[in-house]
Image 1 (cartoon, one colour):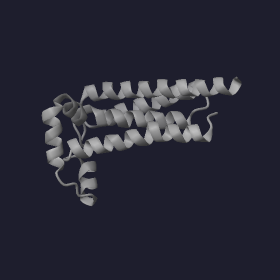
Image 2: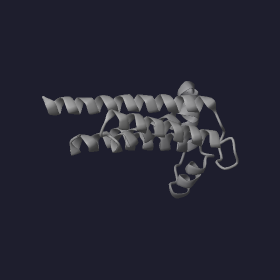
Image 3: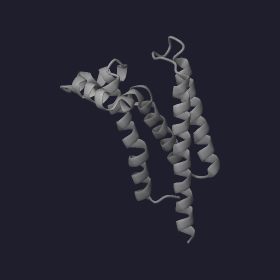
Length: 153
């Protein structure tokens, strides 16, 4: 079992920061998305289009990845981290959190083919999200094993 301090640190680093980063990327690069429009109703950000243009000119690959994949990657990483922290009792639970995250995110992406969820289906999104889920699962699993090792010794 993790200490409360370690749990809170992991929660902030692996869940909250990726969520906020994904949200910021959406607001900057996907202003037409519902979540961006909702946020921009309450928070007026001047020169947002200038920031986006500046990044697109000087860092075109980053702008492309941010617009299309990085925010989804951050959110997938955050979801898996959160589930793994909640279900941290054993390796079987970590595998369960991986499966739950993978099925949920793949379903959400696939539902974009229907009128139920607005968006554009992209198979590469699923690959990116599954990679982020696996990466998060590996990190959380290694941290959990380290905590058990330190507790024994």
